Length: 271
Image (cartoon, rainbow, N blue to C red; front, side, top):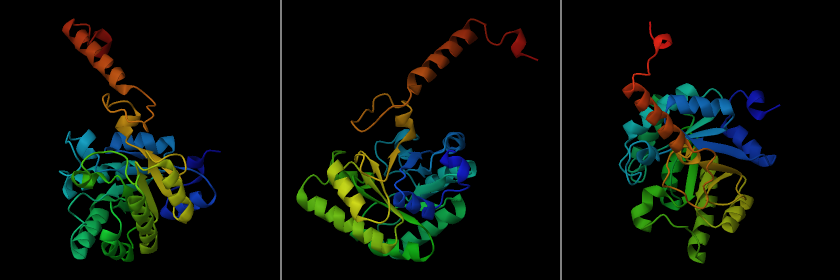
């Protein structure tokens, strides 16, 4: 029997148990009710309402412009659709990197207004006190290390992170600190597969990889990329499971043609 028929609701403890028994964790992003319902019914374990909505939904070059209000809007739509999956939401740039109190207030507001189940924050030691306060309030937190898109201007590009020993050692220290602070999982983005596997083996909380190899405890992709809706984005780590760009384009082209030729609507498609 499939997992999604035997578990009523995926929880943070269920995610940790998956790691313990060696079951890989599936995660995809979603930003709207319709897509989230499809992913939920397909058995996706975790639906991430990513700040990648700034890119694929709103057309921004980076994730930085998206606001807390924007993220609450998207998260609430997804939470209304998800009956089984754990709904994980990014706190946007500027809401948690500063004062502990501001981070706490943003976290509480997100949980109260969106109906999400957990939050994801980018960064390590630098924000550890803020994470501790949020976790102490009873809010589950997932960490995010490696390529952290909210810091893109510091990195300068979207290349692989932690290739050098110093950065790799810091990433490992950050991962241990996040675990100690109470994070229930950590996303590892675009780091060497060997390092990701090492980090995954040294932690008792699960890791979710994106461009981090098969040694992680689970995998996440942006749903628009995975479905082939973003035709110009094809990084090495991306496997496209469909080509919806061409499918939707062909359907829209046919619709335009049918309207122009007066073929649509026909007699059976009117009252």
